[in-house]
Length: 134
Ligand SMILES: [Zn+2]
Image 1 (tube, protein in one colour):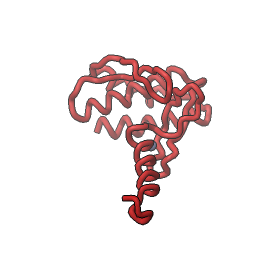
Image 2 (cartoon, protein in one colour; image 1 turned 90 degrees about the vertical axis):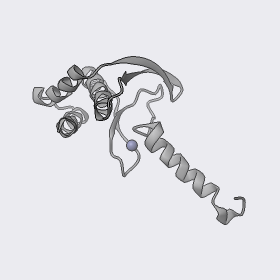
Image 3 (cartoon, helix red, strand yellow; image 1 turned 60 degrees about the horizontal axis):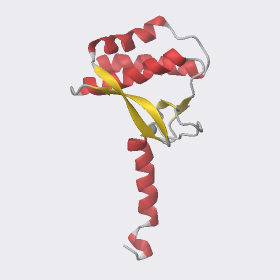
């Protein structure tokens, strides 16, 4: 239920941000709820050629994921409206993400999911047995 509430609120808030509309207090409340109940810390992560902050939550099943999502969402909302909000290039994904790369040309919500899936698909095509080099 927490997950569903968070996801519905995020959709509304991020869509509003993309359209440069105001973010309603009731959309932010589910984010704060999760931030309140989850513990974690920030770490510097090297990604897309730049160091950036990433929230590392304490392990704990689904709450771990929710905390990371809530944290990212909170950062987005806090930096609105100058935030480089983008939509993942994977058509099956459609997630919003925060383009922290220096060039602002990041294409995937996450390199470890959609980015790699795309790379693996490209690799599989290039190295398919049909070419006789398998
Ligand atoms: Zn994606």
